[in-house]
Image 1 (tube, rainbow over the protein chains, first blue to last red):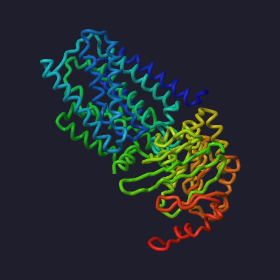
Image 2: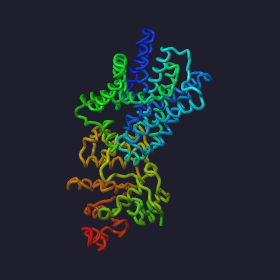
Image 3: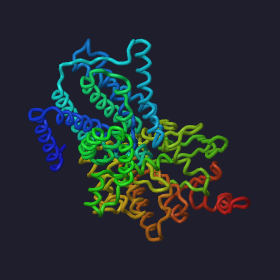
Image 4: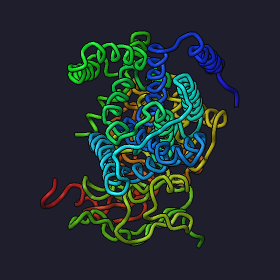
Length: 322
Length: 244
């Protein structure tokens, strides 16, 4: 099938950007490289999150559950298997968990879905803690590798590129169209022949697998893995805040939120460590009230006044929850 | 006699103690335009929901070309070849007119993709009277145009049976004339249609045959002219005791 010219251009530009970014560890190190790893981490996770939550309007707080599962895939098997094999285990574990959650939540929408996914993260963390204290002897696991910060950066950059290409391919496929129809009206979707359950589960599995891989890549950085850190609900919240700040209607929308948010958060947590949680909360409220469609959504409606406002992720979630 | 295209066989739907459809049976022949009428709350829309798979019957059979479809999920029934419109118009607001109609072509009975799906959608937009409006966001369209979109989307699946749930409701007199003409045209092309409708003029002029429901049961089935003159049907509509 022929690919539209502007999409080819965007694809080319994206790959060129990635190529340039790949040189970053050669020119910088220490603080800036470390910050770049954070940015790249959230770029991958937020984009993967938006693959599912953008079109379906289902706000998932399960990111930390997938992330933790990926981290633990590495922590448990690091002494017996090579790192690339651990990444594959993370893919399988993330996808499997997402499929189970997807099956369990098929009939849930709005706030019920949000609560379920938040509970799942907490449950996963508690299970891992329980298993470790009863059978493992210690709360944490050590992960020692030869991977440097630069390696992690490259791995995360590669992951981000793969997430983007996957998202682009999905958008061009029947699956992508099915998702857009579901996001508009699930009843219509069913009656035009879309298997809504299958579509939801597949997309959630793809999204969950990517987030788990991000967790696996980050494991060597923590070196000592604890359930509290791996399954921290803050990861889930950050993902939602950044993706919403950027906007979820476009594939690259979350990226627009990730870069400034990570920079600002780093500054805040460095200078006001005790007030960080409060500031995050206020930032979340501000984003929801001021920019319900994210920065990209806001810009689009500014540029295309003639087009009617599209349904925003937040407003539709609130409506469904009622 | 050959197998009817659609056979409804003693279909029953109960919501707890409320029996919305009570052992209703009727058949629809290929190419027929059947009117399904009755006062509000008589179970017409429930009947359409049972045929299209929005709901599954408590008991009874629904056969499409002899193949049982009762109780299958809606998307499977859509793929087998039943398309519908909705009583309260349901379009895909953030998508263009062309995409709305193409949606019906991609996943339904037709299973087209890419240029084929778009070409069919363009044809259908022209057929329902929306030529040149392909790129208009559907949320910005008028009520009748949204109804046209729904009709185009349903036709895009190339269904064996088309279910219209009060498709003519809420149209002004001139729109009504256009709408009726459109249904007549689609029927003339050989499409089998079941239309639930309150607009009696439309039933009289479009449907040769109609089925009348009241309180969940079938009270009449036959030629429209004679059915509409049936005293029981008149009583059901005008009421002689509790509803008026």
